[in-house]
Length: 339
Image 1 (cartoon, helix red, strand yellow):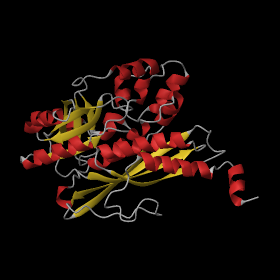
Image 2: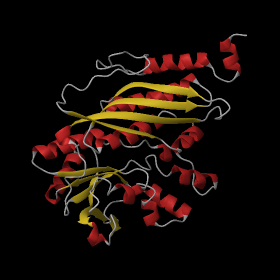
Image 3: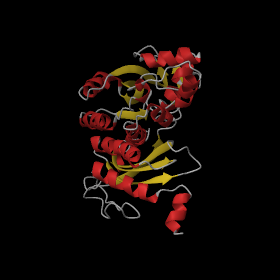
Image 4: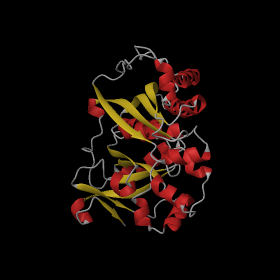
């Protein structure tokens, strides 16, 4: 018995993996001139961007969490890749960096070439939409550990920014305002609660749950560049992910500063009300679990609030003035306070 046959009997289909790779190559334009080693090497050999004189490298890794189970149940695998790219790329953007390179990791119970190609194809399309190169990845088959149609997907993003343009929280000042950008829905957080509500019959399974996470990178980078060219100070950027608004809005600020938020200053999409009622949890807890309609936030000088919203509107993004930066001693020692 050949080693390959024995491996197949153990549950690993090498031939299916090869077919999946071929399908991915057909669907993805992953190679760029700065991928020096070519696709298929042991590692991605990359060059530094030529337009960055004194580069700082910014990295982030994340996944789509248990939103993958919703995708599996609905049989919709073409959108989950955007969730992974958004979760990683928009973390990188919070430091002012341009997402440049991306790698993905996909674990499956059994390799189905079409399903694998759908998932990774979604990653590639999302990368292409923001000018980020998908330069490599891994598809792992886990027979016996995962159900045949189960999967998990994660990503790793590398970005670059000029050292003197790095956003590290040091620019923020008391009196700055917080401009919140509309989310596209649940994004990729809070799905363990959502799945429990589905399993208990308290929430209906629908396509709305799979609305892809918005990718803010292009709009935010243009916003930062435009404001800086006008002499406007950008205090910080915040991606609203796990922990919701209380955990993420203060993250770009120094410890001495916090955020006072007007929780009624933006429209909350109906899906969050449905979850609140189904789970019987109040809005402060909702905002500590979900984005509740705010997927990203920009901290800027007060006088630039209107210009910020106008620039974002030019990118088709709704935005609202949702809060203000204050010293923590004015917030009762807290870094997040709802007004």
